[in-house]
Amino acid sequence: MTTPSTITIAQNSAHPLTVSRLGYGTMRLPGPEVWGEPANRAEALQILRTAVEQGVSFLDTADYYGEDVTNRLIAEALHPYGSDLVICTKVGATRRPDKSWVPYHTPANLRASIENNLRTLRQEQIQLVHLRLIGHGGVPFEEQLGAMFELQREGKILHVGLSNVSREEVERGLSMGPIATVENMYGHGQRTTLHSPHGESRGGEEVLDLCEQHGIPLIPYFSLVHSLPRADDKIAEIARRHNASEAQINIAWLLHRSPWLLPIPGTSRLVHLRENLLAADLRLSAEDMAHLE
Image (tube, one colour):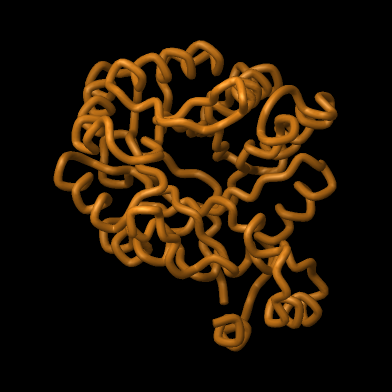
């Protein structure tokens, strides 16, 4: 089986973005609990440079990683940015001094987050921003997304996406305006439902067919973190068959699962980055994929 090497975000818009189908998520770069400076700053900077040198053209970040750590690392390592590099960030959450993750989703909060991302990334416009839904209550979904579309009209955002959303929320979002991407937890070991405290399913499988119907790339996060620690004999068997690591097979499974998936496996080790990137060269057969199902 062959897989496309690129994917286009907002393909029907006036400003489509075509990127490599294997991106890089920066969440693992900060210190423990996604807080503070990296354990090895020089390696973190080299990871970012190597990813881009090796053809990665999609980076996922957030100003609440660190705080601001990954954004500052990206700017230090890569600015001025190449014309083909897409940097995607997230808003809707913030961190407290106790390292907890809390909603930050009023229109004023979202605007402040966008301004902070623009400053720390050294950009005049952010190409893609995900509205991350975290917690419940406070600010209605429509008010949050409406504020994002307003920032888009002002030119601070090029494209708007959604993160950690249910199928129903994707549908509501589409009724309000163009949704460029969806970012949900998804991987071979976490395919089915991810139930929130209020009963919604916010995993990848629940929204994948909807994304495919509308030509919306689905960006899986935690695709390795939640699958590798679990005993998975099927992944191990396919890994042996291809002389590959289990992480590589997990990534290859996503690339083969749907052409609308844009994996962003993250790591804080340069050796693991190089290993992950090689997963794009793996070709799983129809029999391999059937076995993994």
